Image 1 (cartoon, rainbow, N blue to C red):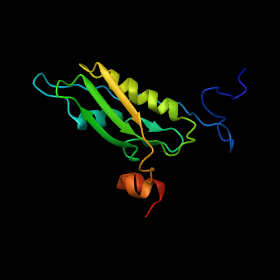
Image 2: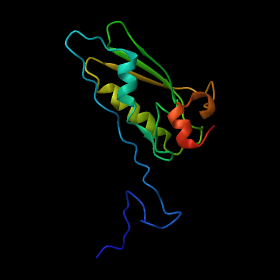
Image 3: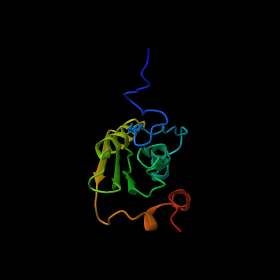
Length: 137
């Protein structure tokens, strides 16, 4: 008999119950035979990764400050931040970004750099859709 507790989720319908803080990895990058890896491909691969506390994509939140792909496409550098230095799921978000980039065909050196400058500000960095969801206007 179940007591309703899901160790990986929450108590349904109970305010203040723990929420699911699982961070899921991003999408695979599939390139055409003659296509070169571009920063936009990496951003689209990272888009499914959500901040589990806000339930919005880290790309739409503006947490990705930049993506660089070397000429030979073997190294991808992702400069990113978190919503704050005390983000309880920061290590999981960074790992999801790293693992997603590491899965890109041809990438031998995924380099995820956590930066704090400039500090993340949703008014400045978030997409219009994310601002709408957050009620920022």
